[in-house]
Image (cartoon, rainbow, N blue to C red; front, side, top):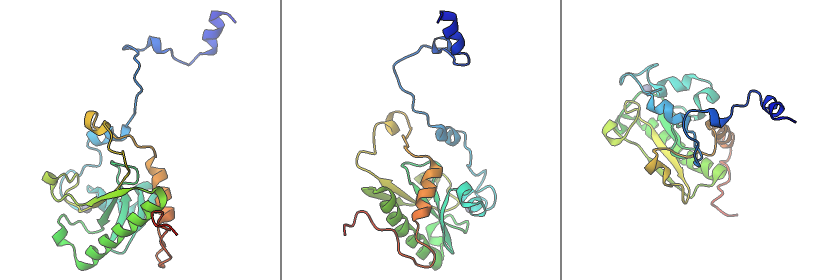
Length: 204
Ligand SMILES: [Zn+2]
């Protein structure tokens, strides 16, 4: 095979030597979700309820499109589009309410119950070693969408806090959101009170 034949066989395959810039020894970790975040995609234009608010809009979408994992009567569970870890869930009331003190008793109870179920399902599906739970109240406290309350359920594993968030403001996520959603939704207990998935942290 001549040199020319070899070039022809690679037709359509670009040679990195021809690219702009200088090749180096670093591997690239692509985090396109960060670009959506940086670009402000899904960021509400204001604090109003309705189509400008993702947590008002999501419940009207099919589960797979909205990344909805479970739906209750007063609140629902959705994957965070910008997760800190794989399986980072948000528990949101359907009602467009900003402050925890504004929730009614049914909403308080269901947000709490869905949070507990989310922990059980995440333990059964992916065996985290711990969780961060909480609500950021107000933009000053770190709430990205401050106008519509959401409780974070972040599964944690030993060693998951590596250098990337510090030096690169990036997270390495080993699983695609659609796959995570499908696995969690499949493991979520049914509305008929069928048993929650076995808690893998509980032996026997
Ligand atoms: Zn809303």
